[in-house]
Image 1 (cartoon, rainbow, N blue to C red):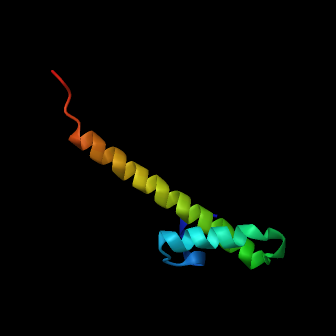
Image 2: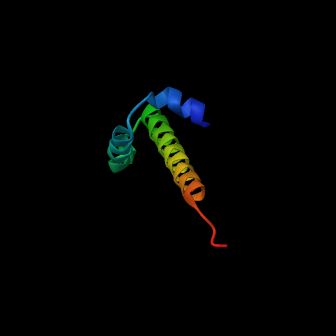
Image 3: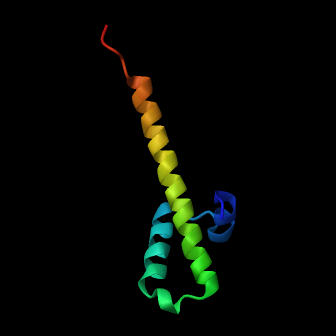
Length: 70
């Protein structure tokens, strides 16, 4: 599953909602339907992608503000 498919499944949810979804769907995993399992996987993918993007933005800001000592 790629990020576009995952976003289509979970929609445009805020990060806290994705975290809550992951927590709820991970507690009693044996009760999940196949659709719940897809939502859990999709939420994990979208949240992971958001964290990667956030880290890249932090690194970009750090490199822009970096002034080497001459």
